[in-house]
Length: 142
Image (cartoon, rainbow, N blue to C red; front, side, top):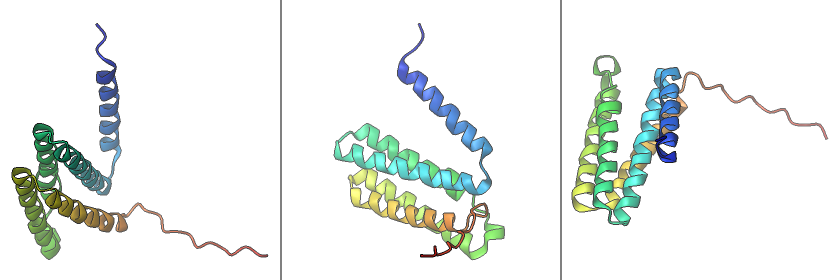
């Protein structure tokens, strides 16, 4: 009659995500894509170790979709020049490695892509135009 508690929680979570996306700056949206891909890859590793083939495949497919249809599609190769072209090649490489990981059950390949995404995410966060620079702390007088 009212649906399950889980569906209610999922609906609430979806509203939170949608609200976050609508309020996010373009820079924050890219950070959210990195986060989504990393969560999907963590899920894939757990499912791979549990030998849950369907869930593993779904999680890897989600990560590939985020990389290809989110991160890679957001590149502007005309404006971004060499950096955009290099990122495009790196994203293509990541998707290929994830496909291999899925087909051959190789967690090391998923971990490799996780490391690459984590490094890119850190670099992306370092250039956040909305981040406030840290204020120097004054030493307290003793």
